[in-house]
Amino acid sequence: MPPTFLFIFLLLSVLLHFIFPIKRIVCAPYNYLGVLVIGLGVMLNIWSDSLFKRKNIPIKPHDNPAQLETSGPFRISRHPMYLGMIIVLLGVSIVSGSLITFIFPVAFLIVMNRIFIPFEEKNLEHIFRKEYLNYKRKVRCWL
Image (cartoon, rainbow, N blue to C red; front, side, top):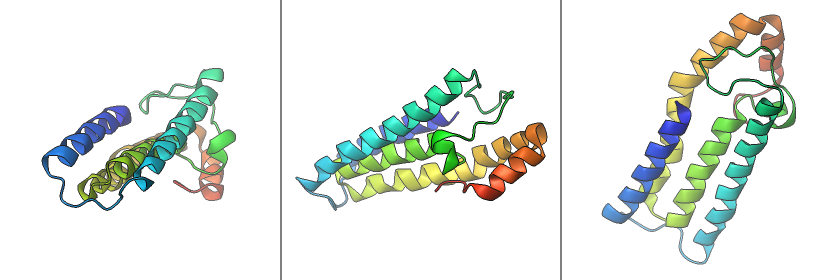
């Protein structure tokens, strides 16, 4: 599940920051801007999650939704929850300032693009057919 990958990547990011601090590329006080970035990612996830909960849409990728959510952040990104997770990872990288930690937002993006998004989009195309294809044509995957 994507939250599991997020947790693992966050843990690895913190561990590698302390074990292999290769080079610090974001120094104080600029690294504190990462806290704002983390907050932005968390807020995006809460907003996206609340839309699903309000409409009783399952959040787990393997569950079949009864309706397609296209409002709020879903108007500009087909995967705002994953985007929020990447933003959180980026914020953690900025806070730590360590070059090595910037691997994890990119790695998360690759994992989502290769493993989760193709499965989810194929499933949504199967369930919603033309409605999802039209949505997919209008809204980018990430931004």
